[in-house]
Amino acid sequence: MRQSPANRILILLKTDGPQLASTIGGALGISSEAARQQLTKMGEEGLVEPVTEAASGRGRPRQFWHLTAAGNRQFPDGHADLTATLLATMAEQLGQGAVDAVISARETETLKRYRSEIEVTADLPSRVATLAAIRTREGYMADHWQEEDGSLVLVENHCPICAAATVCAGFCRSELETFRATLGADVEREEHILLGARRCAYRIRAI
Image (cartoon, rainbow, N blue to C red; front, side, top):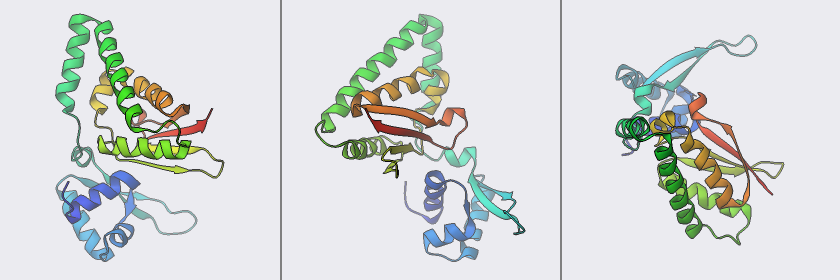
């Protein structure tokens, strides 16, 4: 994606969630008014929308800018419509067993590929960092960090296979198992795009 002001705003809202115009302006190095003008233009194009939220205490309500469905579609979708249609047709014509076989084969191939890039003797934070880099390369816009309690968090701000996963939840289950096997760690999904969250987030702990 080219780094025009509009694209930078789309990426910021995708990775960090709803933002104030002043925050967006600061991130882009422009004034709040310039950011509002850009946001208004993007709103007219249907890419973003403002949502007024009450401030805590006696403060004035604040206007946060959100991505719309059209804004989210600006990011790679892995040929969403075609994939979803093919999976639905496969399940209908060949049975769910055929879909499960495809998911299993994909899991095996993915695990093999991830293990070829992730050093098994490295410490867990390093393994998570490498996995995040791989997932970002694959279009998931991943990030990671370590919490004060020592656990690690992997977040994916975008899901290029979301349409496929919507049709067949087996993809999400498979990816969770792939993470566990690749990292050799306890991995739990705490936020899930398919359940309405803005992103998928995983809590990772050493076994």
